[in-house]
Length: 316
Image (cartoon, rainbow, N blue to C red; front, side):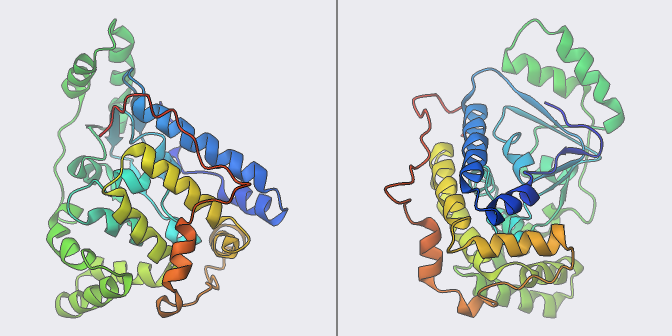
């Protein structure tokens, strides 16, 4: 699986979703999420090996249609992120599964800040399995085209044989995992912010100051919802995460919460004034009941996502 131009996949068409919600066409929105999540489940349980070439921007749903697969090839052009909290949404498309299973609490950090990771970071964290310089990608096509087997070990060996060696530079996320764990292991978003503020004051590290800035720009409601989602995902299987994420997405585009998503998309991608008016406007106004409502079972007239869970899960 490959993208074209500057991106592997920059995520779902959230501007179109914004338009559909504004037009009251929620059924089309539901079909989008249902189709996407079903595809991700099939990808994660498909027995035949799958190779995704993450050459360029890989954000939001782009991670969902690649990371649950067998092999993920990062390059020197890869830019990965889950920036949903900045449009008033939650990291979905299986992000609550694969981010929560990263080392320590780096999943919370990536989900809540929307931090961009490069190909080297993805290799270091296990989000990618192999690394190629972008100019060498033709070797993958040539090598895989000659294979007469779908044995994963043979494909793995072929990718490793032609792959490039890569080492984290001094700005890599691997050098700040200890501090990330210390700050993002706290129970609440408020405590995480406090810990980051203390760390920024004592260390004056650029990444820490930037993380704080990103947290304060994000939707307060989306931050609390996303933290809980990642924490729940740590103890769930792929299918359980997708069913829960579908429920969250349906609640997120409902009349009760759609303002947050629509306002985030408007501010960042439509009007591009980058001044969203979040509701609630600050963390202290986000109640537990608001967060609980995001995770509430769908009503009798709204079916939950049904997945063919008898299929074997290949990615655990």
